Length: 355
Image (cartoon, rainbow, N blue to C red; front, top):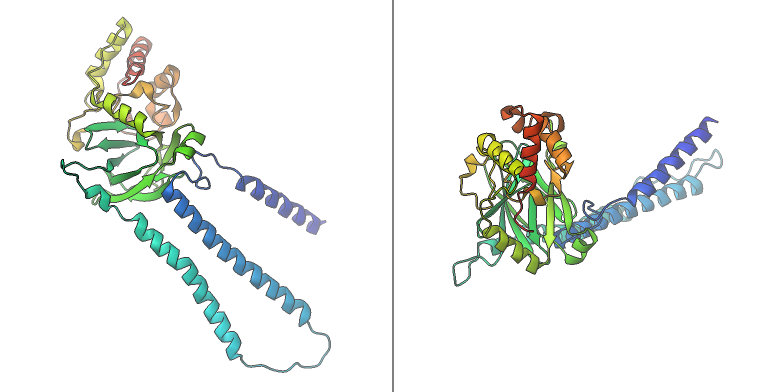
């Protein structure tokens, strides 16, 4: 009965493993690569896995052959063999060959993925043809700056499809790690040096993910590490260019209703010191203590984790510590009445760059 119970348990885990191996959403799964980098890494993973499984199968077959063919049949002592030069050469050469099969494409891909020379090249007009994004990681949010376009966004990265996007990565407080599972990565963001790399997002993969990918912090950075998410909007080139144009020409937001005007006053009295409401945030990096809210009304998530609606926004404003422990907003937050929360939420939801 005990053996039967063990086999049932093993069968259950086997079935669960098969089911879970098929899980994975196109916006968050490394097993559904969405770009050149992710595809390269996925192919290397398949190659290494195939080699390991192959070795296991060969060893298993040899093990059973030895067990059944050379099992003891009588009391006679078999011929004693002290060594075999042929076997020693075989089991030395085979691992070397397997390592070369794995090492050559891995090293080649490493150098290819580390080539960021294009981000430093400039055309005749003195401008870069490559799209460069400066990523700054903070406790517990992300900032994305487009230096050549003069745009800064918070929590949502917008990129064109079918072209390489180059990144400069740094952290403002502790070590974080920038990772978009579907697109590739990951790479650390440090406080004392800038790391660089590039990604590419396929249009076909973006269509399957409805144009939205998820990004994560992949380095344990504090109590809310697991909640340090961001979103990536992958747009066709024409739509991305239109987004850039809209962001570059965005003006100071104007509240249209009396309630929104009251919310704007509250925002200007207590929030403007850390947040900005225009994409052309000219403040130095040290002064940007919280996400840029210029297109807050167009986001898909609040604080990177909550559904984007006024109810969840007011929940966040009431008690941000509950949703993201140790976040910096909790240190400076002032209590607001229910009417003030309604007004502030309405104003924040009206912050849009594109209609």
